[in-house]
Amino acid sequence: MTSLGAPGFPEREIRARARNGTAEVFPDPATYGTRLYGPGPTAVADGLDRARIVPPVFMPQRLEKLIDLAREPEFTDVDLGSHVGGFTTRLPLYLSAFGSTRAGSGDLAVQASRQAARLGIPMVIGENMIPVHGYRRAGDATRSALLARVEAYLDAAPDGVGGVVVQQSTEDADSEVWNLLYSDPAFRPLLESGRLAFELKTGQGAKPGLGGMTVVDRAEAELLARRFTVSDVLDPAGERRLRCATPGTFTDEILRQQLRFMRNNFPKARTWVKFHPGRDIAHAARTAWSAGADAVTVDGAEGGTGWAPGVFLDHVGLPLAECLRRIGRPDGCLLATGGMWEGGRAVRALALGATAVGLGRAALVAVDEDPEHGLERLADSIALELRLLVSALGKYTVAALGPEDLWWPDGTPSYADGPTVPAHADLAAGPARPVVTDPAGATP
Image 1 (cartoon, rainbow, N blue to C red):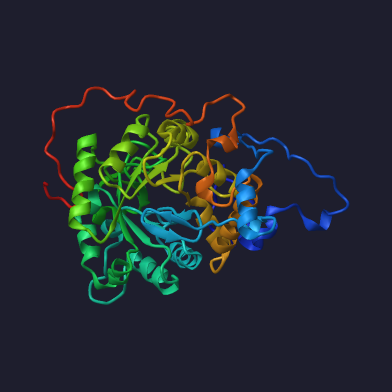
Image 2 (cartoon, rainbow, N blue to C red):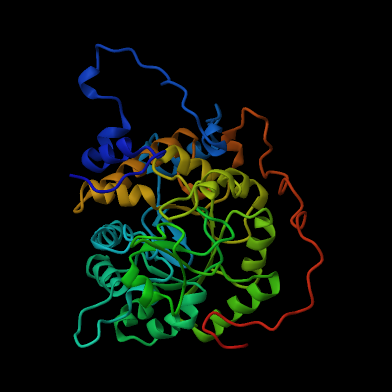
C-alpha cells in the first residue's frame, strides 16, 4: 500500500512510469492495430505546458550529424550528458531538495538518494536537516538523516559523475552546517572528487517569501522552540504544532557578500543559490552569476513537496515559464524546478535556457511506488522522451535547444531579443549598504 498522495499532480501517470518505465512513453501496445490514435483530451495546463514544441522542416544540424556519423542520425544518437553547476551528469536532471519534512527526510529520501546516484545525476539535500534531526545521535555512532542520504549516494555513485548539494538557510547558519560538513571526513570523497556543492537558499516555489514549515507534535515542538518559531495555529487544544523557519533577508549586496563568503571559505565546494519565483528574478539571477555562483536554481510557483498555506500554493509567485522568460538568455548555469515529471515539460524549460530540471514530488512518488527502482524507471522514461524530442527538432545535444523550438499560442515572446521586461523593472532605489551577516554567522 502506498503512503504518499499528490493532489493536483499526475500521480497516477508517475506511478505507472515508476512501475513500467519507458513503456509508458507510448500508448498501450495491446491496442496496436485496433485503435486509431490522435491528440488526447486537452488538459488544463500552465504557461509552460501550453507552449508547442515545433520541429523545423530544414535541419542543418541533422545534416552535420549525418556527415559526422556517415549514416542517417537516429534518436539514440542524442547526447543527454551535461555539466550542471560544476558537476558532470549523465542526464539533464537532478534530484530536488526535499528538506526536513517527514516525507522528504525518511527512508524514501535515502532510497531516492541511492537511485539518483546510480543515474549519475546530482542530489540536493534541503534546508534545516541538522537543526531538526541533528547530526549524530548522542551516545552512539548512528548517522543522522542527512548523513544517511550522503552515504547512500556515495555507495552507489559511479566515478566522475553526479554530486551532492547541501542547502543552508538562516537556522542552518546558526548551526554552522557548512562548516560542519566541510570539515567532516565523511565528505572527503566528495571534496576530493569535486562533487560537493553548497546552496544558499533564499526561497522556494511552494511559499515565496516564507521560510520552511513543518508539522510537529507537542514534544518535538518543545525541543525545536529554541531554534524555530513554533505556533499552535493548527490545533490549539491538541498535539499538532506548526514549526516555522525564517526566510532570511536579502538585498543584491547581501547576496553578493554571502556568495563571496562561500567561495572564499569553502573553495573546494561549488557555489549554488536557489531563488523563489519573485518578480525581480532576472535581476536576482544575474546578481548571483556576477558574484560567481556556479548554478542558479529557480523554483517556479508550481513547485511542491513543502508544507505551505493554501493561499500561497494557489496564488503566490510567478509561474516557471514567466520566470524563464524574464531571465532570458542566462549568464551561467540555470536550473529549473516546478511540476517536472515528463520529457515534454523538461524540453520546454531547456529550450528557454535551463541547463537541467529538478525532480521533486515526482521523485518521491516514484520511489514510494517502487523503493528499489521507481526513480530510475521514471528517469529512463524522461530520457527516452528527451531523445525523441531533441532528435525530432534536428538537434543532438540538449545545449542546442533554444526558444525557436517553441511556439506560444498566446503570442508570448521568446528571449531571442533579450528579456521581456527590463532587468530592474521591479526594483526601487536600494538602501544604504547594510551590515551583512554571512551564511555561517560571521560578519565579512
